[in-house]
Length: 187
Image (cartoon, rainbow, N blue to C red; front, top):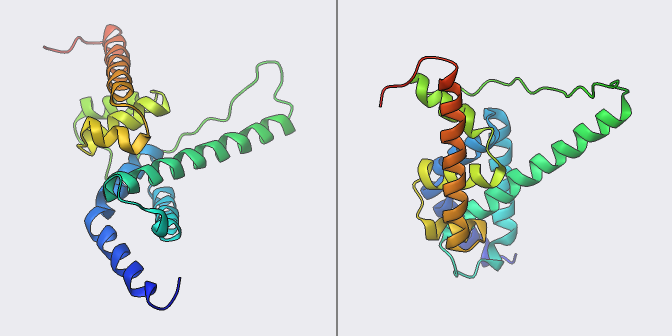
């Protein structure tokens, strides 16, 4: 970056930060369910934005470009964690039962909704596939269109619709099977 580009990049970054920071942060929190980790990952997103500023060609909106970077950063994080867990599991002899290390982190207070049904939905969302979770968060939490979601995920609109349908069905099935063991919800 030369001296002339510095103010332009800063202006671009300031504008992106001002417009999208809260939505971006919320998206990453929903993905990782950890406030401190979300802050770290959002910083990583901003670093990637600064490094790739020159390659942004305007074929998509700034918002879809930013959320695409955020999604890739969170997926990379989960991949790294999976590899670390595998190394730990391979290092220790866990016996025939093949015990798994459980993640018992609670949700941040900002996300843990007061309404008990919403808590159940949020917990069920955590059991969806990464693709389903991404689509549902982008569509229903972030309020993005099918077109914007497709751009962020680099998918066809048809794939977004199919993944959304399957994700919603999966959520419905998880929530209704939970009801089967307890009190039925009123319609």
